Length: 125
Image 1 (cartoon, rainbow, N blue to C red):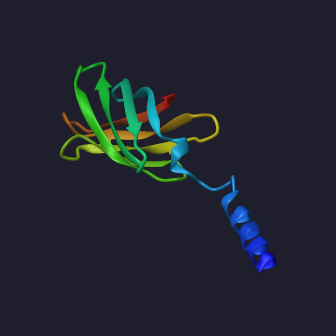
Image 2 (image 1 turned 90 degrees about the horizontal axis):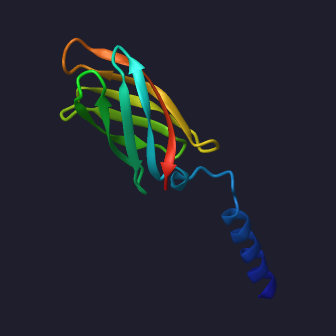
């Protein structure tokens, strides 16, 4: 009986100690940065424990704020929309190792469609 217990304990320890496993908890918190292209400004998002992402883009040219909402995968892939209802996209990658982020954006309001790239970093947990 002792041998079975030790065998099970060892198996659980080996399974539970995998540090390479992807985990959403590394991304939870506030991320901020800038965007540029046919328009420029700043952005910020908050990643929740379930991977839900909410935030805003603020345009330097129009002084408008645009909502960002979407989902982050456990590997750091961000898929979000800009505006309510959906007027564009905010996609990219959040990096676990150096806490940096980058991607692309589009926004069709106001017309014509604007697009470009964004970059930033994690600022708080």
